[in-house]
Structures are given as C-alpha cells and as structure tokens.
Image 1 (tube, rainbow, N blue to C red):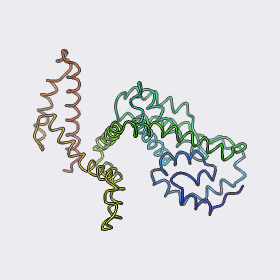
Image 2 (cartoon, one colour):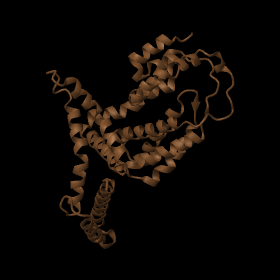
Image 3 (tube, helix red, strand yellow):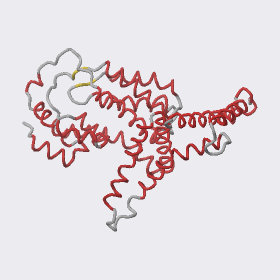
Length: 339
C-alpha cells in the first residue's frame, strides 16, 4: 500500500514524539527509538520535518527489494553522536531502575548501554553487529567498575565498535502484519520502562537519589567544559522556564510545576553547594586561596592514606577518596574561571 506524504506529516504532528509516523512508514527501529526517547529528546522530532518526503519516497520505492551494495554505509557523525547520547541515556535509566541488582556494573549496565547504541545503529536502512557492540561494552565495563561516569566510556567504546561494524540491512522479505509489529514494539517498550516504573513507584526515595547522583555526576564532569555544562543546565531548566513564561500573570496552575521548581533550585545551587562541600571536606573557609587548598590537601592525604590506617581501612579509604574528589573539584572550578 502506497504511503502518503500528507498522512505522514499529520502523524508526525500529532504523534511524532512517540514515532507514529515511523510506524506508518515501516521504520520500526526508528519508531522504538522515538518511543523510548520521546522523539529524540524533542530535537530529533523537529529535525525530521525536512526528512519526511525522502522517507515516504523510499517507503514507496520498489527498488528497496533489490540487493544492497556490499560496501558499508558512509560514516555519519550525527548517527555516532546519537549512539553515544542514547547509550548514555539507556545507562542512566538502568542506573535508576536496576542498580540494586548484584553485578549491576558488570552485567546490567553494559547490556543497557550496548542495546541503546544498537537501537540507533539500526535506524533506517543501516544496522550493525549486535554481538560486537555488546562485547565492546562488556569488556569496557570492568575497567570503570563502580563509577557513575562509567556510562560514558562504555557508550563511546560501543559506539565506535558499532560504527566499525556498520552495514546495510539485508533486503526486506514479506512485511510483518501491523499487529505483529505493534506487539514487538510494545514488548520492547515494556522491557525498557517496567524496571524504571517499579523503582519510581515502589522506591521513590532511591529513585530520586539515583537521579540526583546521576545529574550531579554529569554536571561535575562537565565542569571541565564550562560552555557545555551551562548548556546542559539550561536544557534541564527549559521546561521550567517555558512554564514560567506561559503562566506568568495567568493566575492559575501555580502549584502544578513544583517538581520543576525543585529541579531549578537544584541545578542553580549545585555548583555552589559542591564547592562549599569541597571546602568543608578540606577544612577550609569558602574562597580560600590555592596555596591553602594545596597545603590542606597534602596534609589530609597523608593523614588518611590507607597504608597509614590499616586498623581502620574502610574509613580511611572513604575519607581519602572524599579528599581527592574535593581537591579535584576545586581545582577544576579554578581552571574553568576566566583569567
């Protein structure tokens, strides 16, 4: 049955963030990706506006049944960036919903990140080798065991591997019925959302803690890149700012966005609170000069070094890590400030 451009645009406008137009065009991998990311975090959905005519023409092109070129597809920076981003996103969702499982960092985390990367690899007429992508993720995971930022190197490694193994999908055979396609999409969606929903409804406090830790870890890492960190903060605050703009002076719905009020306060105060905590860990006053930071760091490292505290190894290790983290945080913030 021929696909109509007008119907595609209507589905894009009405249900684009959940991939209705991709279901209509038979692009199930793309539809699943949009269902799980709400239209590529909104950006991908808007960017698609100019792509729809080409996709409709491709869906109606009988030549799609012909054998594809044995040459691999051209390298796409956009697809690679999407693989990394969605891999991180899948990893964060796994961190929130599955981090209580034994062996999470060795099993669940690399599996989630690898599957996220592969979903992006399978969008359109391309795909990649799932086994190689997962192997790369599982081999990278032990190197960063136990670290919240392990998601980033795992996603990068899996994305590079997926790009190296990219290829065109084989010729399509008889198409599955719409009922069968929706059934498989529904199963994939439930597999993604069920752990997250369970954790959110049955363990709300842990979910909030994991989410705050994840946001904090990302913002802390982005202190190396002040411009990118500022962009991410504004992106997190975008729903809040949009709500305030729409409701300014409207006189209704004042309490509806209390959650985003808390997010706003958290993001705005995160960097200053992190620095205050770092000063406190090092036993310094706020705004202490660099010389005092270096001196306090050297003294505390000697005091809490595990080799000097074998009788209280766990406490010494914890204090030692906190001192190092506080020192690195203050040094990064100093370097990030313009001269």
